[in-house]
Image 1 (cartoon, protein in one colour):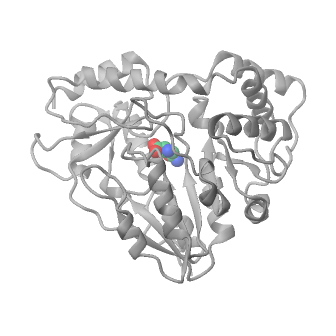
Image 2 (image 1 turned 45 degrees about the vertical axis):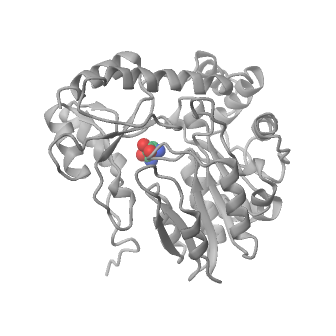
Length: 380
Ligand code: GLN
């Protein structure tokens, strides 16, 4: 008889909300994706590579030109020199990188620390590997990490700590000093650190992204995960990558080769060319998104929502506690039905759901979409 391996896991909230938004004709600020296209030149390069015959299996670890372009990009961003041959693996989006890394490194009975609210793919990946997710809630209301609690959760069975900065769904960021605290905590352990850094180029108000690649002690035991879906406005292409020292990369590839094997070849060639031709593309992203955040928030002036401007990601939390008290799940449901704006409740990202009065909105949208959504939100 059928016995589920994930009996407590339903359909991901992103699919639930996007389907409902389509059904109700709502503006979708729920699932995080832009309503604009990748750069024209990048689209042109994809067409060129399809026409040029790059249509068969790519190398299992990724097209070498792309891995080299990534190495150049990481050196420019984080002063970290990585070896394109042995430390870079192209994956099916960041989700596959995370899944393959957890499958490769976590053994049955191992503990993996997750900081709640945690992205919804993390815990299922740990459970399928036979590991035990150890959920530690972030502090409220600022959604920062309580490192004392992390330290107290270290046991001899700890195999991995997962961090995510800039943080989805809350928009908080980890600072360089905090990475040093984490490195101290992990010093006496054999644990890995898996860092989901897909929003690396979306940090605001002059802050700097603190990558584990810029921290020698964490990089030694680290896997950093990135995504071209985010940086190239192409979430549907599903191209991401994992950076890790050679011994860790070898293990990740053992799984990756039988999970997805290799990633769409023409997309990889196109992104490689685009990165080489336009190395300044990424540097413009934070200004591009900060303007969108500010425009969205300015348009919400006069509404009953309150907020702290997002520090990173393309998500903004809005606090609805001045609007009749309901749970965040009920509020998101009311919002999509009453004013037709889809959002994501935050409590669903917790093992133990707290009572929260914030919901998440994606501001990676055209100005007109943001204006129209804000106009509806002002009616709440
Ligand atoms: N990362 C996206 C978000 O947070 C969702 C991606 C997905 O639906 N798998 O909205």
